[in-house]
Length: 421
Image (tube, rainbow, N blue to C red):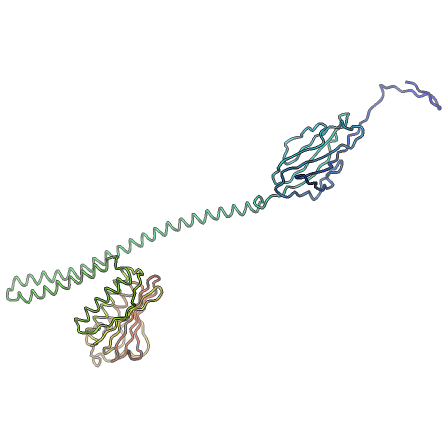
């Protein structure tokens, strides 16, 4: 092709022409979340090669995301084609053709980057395109710290439950073992009582019967002795049955039997018995071993009063305290000359009596000190305490304390105090 100009002739060969097409710049114009426009950072600018250092933060619970984008090319015009993808959601590029909007529904909480590219009418693609980075924030229960807290709580709860179940299991085993030991102790005690009391009584009756057969002249005397032995056996059996009967394992059951025994025993000895007991006795449980040893200690005290105290009156009192009870036995007899202060019998030492003859206490268990040691052993067996207060010629008061819940260290103390009223 030839052309004339004022300066000469110009020629052009079309076969030698080279077309150079420029990729169109891309712009993310708008982001709308649930219909509300969100201010874009520099990441939405044309040909943005770097994301915004501070991505857009979207509150949790949003369900609609719309992106509007465009190609800034007059050559391409409406013939520009687009591709986009949402990094963190899409696995590949989506070919939008000439569509200039992208829509997404509810997104999981995390970081995202919307990337769009375009090509002109010549098919030349702008591979850089435009990007918009944003973060969908989680609810508090979707955060990492919440999952950690819940996990720790679950693990802790499981560990606590397992430990609690294991503890309960071992406690049940321990309780069963303790119960078994208690049963074995009761069986051993019953066997010992039967052997000592019933066995000895039956042996005595057998011997007396044999003597009556050999010497008919002494039959009446031997029969009387046999009758006395039979009565003692009956009373011993009654005590053994009462000790093992679970329906008497209460304070009321204990005091009913103790008061009846004390009244009958002192009446035979011609000693007046006065009771100072609560009008209503509680139904608090008392272990069989505790009440039995307390009863034996009471028998020991009453026996010493009748044998050695020369008393005309005895007071039986009951004091109740949280977790314990105290049985107090007081007489108006001749008392003990023990000096001032208190001395413990934990080592089994006998009290120091200045002059046993002047006190007219010959050979008695209490006067010799062995009775006090027996009391200490009785109460120590059940974790109780015993205190004896006395003044020569003014009477004696014995306090027997047992603990219903927590056993205390067994102590027996004796000492002088002011005259007993």
